[in-house]
Image (cartoon, rainbow, N blue to C red; front, side):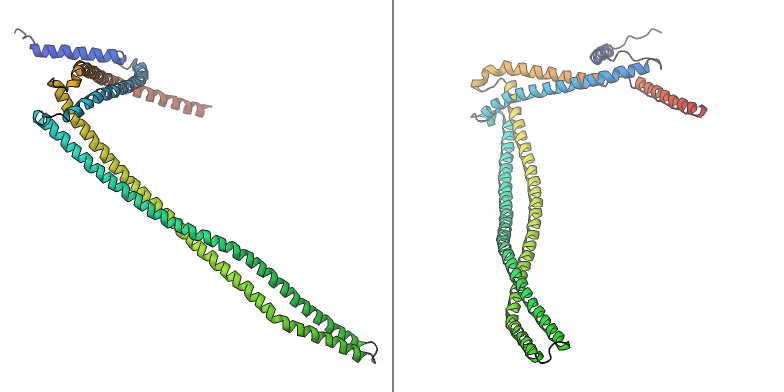
Length: 360
């Protein structure tokens, strides 16, 4: 039987695939993978090193694509924004113009939502700040009162201590006189004893009289000291309670502000998303204008410039795709063999060390 020639389309597809494979091999620099187990480790090391280099190259090309995209988009946005303002654009580009209008309305709605959210956040923060300021003001006043009461308490306490010492001296003098009377009763001149005893007893009566007269003053000083201490304790208790409220207020503010910030970030993300949608709609309008050769009068000379930028962007995008594909074009079979070889070698080394340890 006579063999039939391959269809032209199949042969052409095979040649294209061969060209693609050769291009990927050239970019990757991996070299031909080994057929068997020999050379698998060297191939693994070569590919691993080269993949790191290609990863750096991919990041560089991605930055290039991003830069070229922004450069082209900036020009197209200028054209699109100018075009959307021209009379007759809505009729000439109904789909694109409608998309721009819808996106613009969404941007305005989100902007209003963002403004309302910002005002709500400002009001809530102001309320919490005012609450905290009031508590801080109360604490400040109480601190001043605490300092004044502290000084007064120290003064009253000193006065009361002095009064107690004076009262103790009365007791000591009375006790000493009583001891003298007892000592004289045990011995001495019996004729002179009544006179001396009467004199000592008179002194004792005088001291007792002074003591009784002083007792109200001592009680008053004690009451005054205790009253100041009570007031000071009350101020300190009140201040502690307010400081506790301040702590809770700060925590509440932190929670509220954190929640409001998350809401604001959500709204901001939504707003940027709407802006991106609006820009995308404007870009589609601008690209359609370029395709129809219908640029605004002042931008007619930009057609070739934009065509050049689009061509450069397409080339960079294709280069990025080919570089990514080349980075993944290594032989997975050879890698698998290398893993087995390296793992087996490591296992044998461990076994050898264990055996040597047992022997020696």
